[in-house]
Image 1 (cartoon, rainbow, N blue to C red):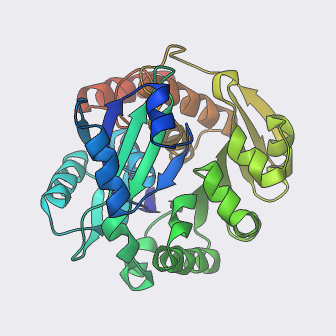
Image 2: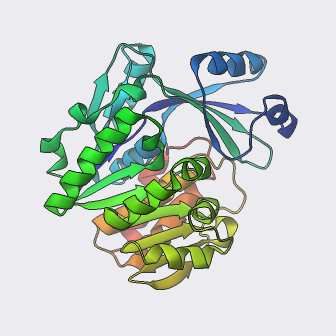
Length: 329
């Protein structure tokens, strides 16, 4: 099975800060803020006395890379620049074995400044850069046609060009019976595109991931179970992640609750949702039942929050892969 993803390749810039720093920067904790180059420069300047850690990331890329490191064939499409950051990104992607369908543009490679507060919450400040250039003409239908699942996130709706690219892929998938997995990705994205997302879920999507806050925005309900129930009426498999309380997973409107598995003392929650999605899709690729897919997803999310960064190291990925192969046959 191959999974084809369209996403935002970003170089993550991680920094540890205090809550008061967020206040000084006028940032809402735990969300993703789209920023321009000027704002990017100001935040980096504010962080000049703090240690910064650079690593390849991006929501959909994190999921595709994790899946590939677990043995599932993946393809990543998106936009990068013609700069040193792009070379670093391509090198990292090559090391994982994920198929590289990144398109180079005369723009800066995108970055995401991830600010980690003492409670391990991450606040992202994303400069899209070259990602904004990726358009429908850049979608390889030949490559997409070889996939069993198409995966994308709500972040793709923040530019017209990327929206066009995803829409082209969705139409092709619908016409040719390719399953679609969608991660809502961010509550602010839901705030911007709520009606569109509901329509996408109902008309195109087979598997949908949302956390409790995103689901609340979608269905105007604070109850994660009820949100999962509502979403299950629109798609085949609905997942609502509920933080330390685990997650609700519905298939054909039958709902199960999956507990948190693994670390309860997170080091860094960056990439937790991306890795959860990777775990669930790994289970789908292996032909497991929905409840087993959800268990694997919960396990992987617990593992990623116990390390710094949004992607496993090669050594950690091998350890996790061995565990999965031994425990799930």
